[in-house]
Every structure is written in structure tokens, then in C-alpha cells.
Amino acid sequence: MKEKETIKIFTWHVHGSYLYYLSQGNYVIYIPVNREKSNGYVGRGETFPFGTNVIEIEAEDVKTLDFDLILFQDDDNYLIHQYEILSEHQQTLPKIYLEHDPPWGHPTDTLHLVKDPEVLVVHVTHFNKLMWNNGNIKTEVIEHGVMPSPANFEGNLDRGIVVINNLPSRGRLLGFDVFQEVKKSVPLDLVGMGTQEYGIGEVLHSDLPAFASQYRFFFNPIRYTSLGLAVLEAMMLGIPVVGFATTEMAVTIQNGKNGFIHTDINYLIDKMKLLLKDPDMAKEIGAAGRETALRQFNIQRFAEGWETLFKKTIATSTSTSNKYTYENNSIY
Image 1 (tube, rainbow, N blue to C red):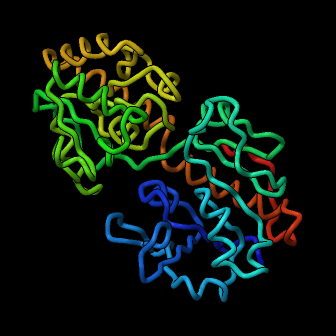
Image 2 (image 1 turned 180 degrees about the vertical axis):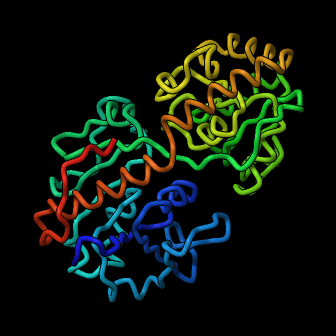
Image 3 (image 1 turned 90 degrees about the vertical axis):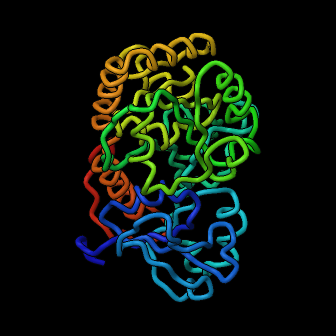
């Protein structure tokens, strides 16, 4: 393969918004689809405006195609799906395991699933890498990247918005109890799949920026997770973010400058009330948050980081001949 040929990545459709942002890079992504549209096999779907470099293929045809690298995105991909769908040769290709989450077991001692020294584990935040017990496996961090918002913050509604899919069924982990407590003191609307009983319900990803732009602030009630793309999309929109000073939020939001964070719910409620009372402050805080998002989470840095890492992984893998000449540039 020549240096200028496009890299061919095979992965599964696990996190739609992440896959959409990942697809902004200079490579081709192949994703499988089956008749049942089972987990990971939904294909392109209709939610995200994927470009022509995201190619949907029938699951039964995967074994006949030529790829450069396999990208796993959850445990099922790694433990089950690869053996069901990939040929013996494809199973020997360079591999990356993309870890979207912090450990759900003990927050510092949980040993990561991947033990194979040939498989690179990529964490989406430095917090995730810190908390996982990665053992002796190879790890990298590529921080999130999101597209610039197609809408501008208006803040005309004297209300806050929460955007989390299936929050009621996901309970304390994602802060359903926090949402219910805060809603007693501050007007909040909940958006997302599976939230109709407690909120507005699903708003399509393409419609969400314009919808959210009318709210005075964005509240993230999650105690413990990765740095959510919904938070970064809100920051890119210019809506002020309020949340907990935990996980990667603690190094993303500077309290009182580009958002409000704390571990005291009453403190956060006071700041929400302040934003409702002072629209000018909301615009100022939101604008600072947007500057942070444009600087730290811009899509070009993200896509170029992935392209560089794909090339490096292919070139240095012992399971394949070196197809690329890799120059040792930083991925950050």
C-alpha cells in the first residue's frame, strides 16, 4: 500500500455521535449492518449525516473485505463480535480498543479487559486512563473533538436543560436523583430518549443545537462518567454549563469563568438561579465556555490525532507488514 492511499478502518456503530465526529477524518470507516439491527449492527442509521467515507456493509460480507485496522468500542466487540464476523486473517490485523468510559467497578482497581500487548487501548479522557488499572497494556489518550455549533446561544427561556438519554432507567450513576432534587428549586427540562415521563423526550441530534440555544443554562447532573459529548456540544453552542467538579469536568470547567462546577448541590442551585436572574452573565459565561471548546475540543485536532494514531499503529504493528512510513509526530 502506498503512503497516500486512504486508511480503511473496520468498527461497529456503538456511540453514534462519537462515530460521527470520528468520521470527520481522512480515512474510510466500514460499519456492519444485519437484519435484526442488533447492538453494533445498526449501520449508518438516519440520525447522523454521515459522509461517504462511512460505508455500511452487510455483516455476512465483512469477511470478504480488506481492512487496515480493527477498532473495538465495547466489550462485546472484543470478546464476541470479532470472532463471529471477522475472518481469521482479519483477526490478525492491527487493533485498537477505544475505551469510552471510566471503570464501572472499583474506581481505581478495576483491571481493564484488554490484556493483549498487541492491542492499543485509547482512552477518551486523561481521567479515564488514570482511573483504569491498565496493567501492562499500551495506552494513549485522544481527547474529544466536536463540530462547531450551527446555532448561537439565545437564552430566552428562563429555564435550564438536561440532555441525557434514558436517564430515569440509569439512576444514580447518571444523576437521576440529582435531577429530581434540583428540579424542586429550579425550572429544568429533561431531553433524551426514554425521558417522556419526566421530560420532553427525544430531540434529534441535528435539531438539538437550535432547541437548546433557547435555554438559559445547561445542567449536567452526572456524578461519574466520561466527559460527555453533550456537555462539549453545549459549550460549543455558547450555553453556560453547570455540573459537578468530578471526573474530567474538573479540568474542563474553570468555576465562575467558563461555567460553574462544585460538589455541593446547593451551591449549583444558587448558580443556576443566578444565571436565570442575570442573562448577561449567562452570555458571558457561555462565551468563555465556547472559547474553551473551540480551543481544546476542535474537530480538526481530534481527526488529525486519530489519523496519525491509525498510521502509527499500522506501521508499528508486529502482526502486519509496515504499510505506512510514520513520522514520529505528537498526536496531541
